[in-house]
Image (cartoon, rainbow, N blue to C red; front, side, top):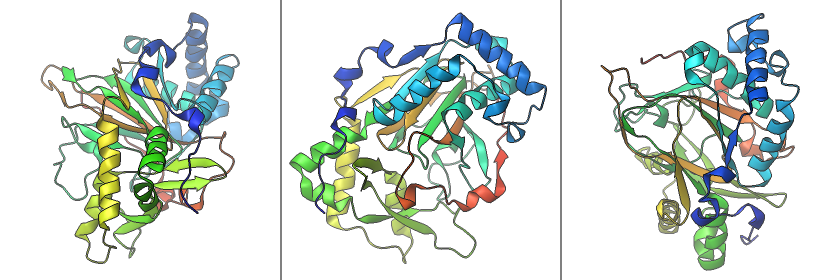
Length: 337
């Protein structure tokens, strides 16, 4: 079938989201007290997130607001910033538990890498950008290009910022898709084909070093996007991987250029205590370059969640959680400060 316009109500440009108040949810005093009580309740059972689920974080009032936010992430704008938690009032472990609790009310946590991390770290992990196995969350300082991760939702919790930079950037992949369909249908069609993606050395034992899936997928009148340009291009280092066609390369670079165009994206600051959640299928995300001051204790450090939402009751096979990483669920415990 030929590509067609999908989910136009989820389209936006930078002018549509210029007002930060439209996508920033401030916790009320009552909700903050409820979050604190939920934390204390969970701690009576365990301080290990692997032993805690949604039922261990009762949020009798806030859960309804989070349900509305979850629906907005899937059926609306596709991103949100949660603000109001006093980072200085909690230890890192306590902040992680609050974040985990909120996350479990938005979806089911998935493993993010070969270590099985269901709660990951985004901070400088002394990995070189040209390391063929490096993941974006391990690279420090450099800007990260627009991409989307391997789950329904991705969440970030800011624990600490560096001394400059590190703004989060989000772009609307629905609008990008629909404009390609309208103006460059041959490029849109090229991205409906399966493209090879580098596994970054994290493939199953004896498996191929790449996996294949389309950038764009239509499923039950919804648009699903999976686009990690550096991984797609890196797949070409494997001789056995299918070669990208000229149309696929042009289409991929066009998506990158559109996302980088200020007309299509917005940047935001994540302050310590802030949380960001986005819909991976409708929103591409990246970040600006940043600088740390390790000696001064100012090292950018975020925690990451990948979540399976309950709003989507149907998704394409290649967007279902079938990862071999799930066999080794664990928690990343870095503390760079």
